[in-house]
Length: 75
Image (cartoon, rainbow, N blue to C red; front, side, top):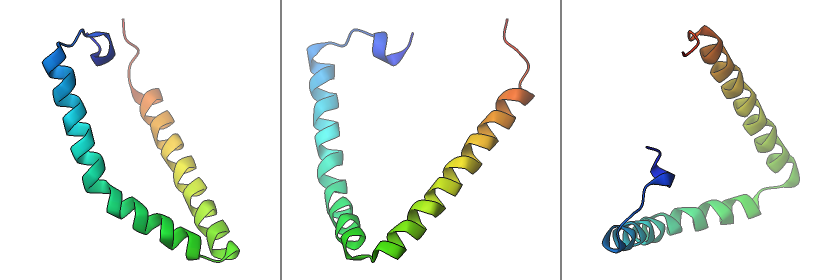
């Protein structure tokens, strides 16, 4: 059964919320540093990074499509 369709008990929901909060507290300083670095970039550098990210995204999509087409159909 998919994770989103499961009924969670109250204690399980609280445990997940605590875990998510702990993770958010741990990652927050890195997010803040990345944001500050992004804000300090020139518009040309920002555009270069965006172009690079689009290239990575396109490459990933192509790899997923190739993997899906190589897999035999279910059923």
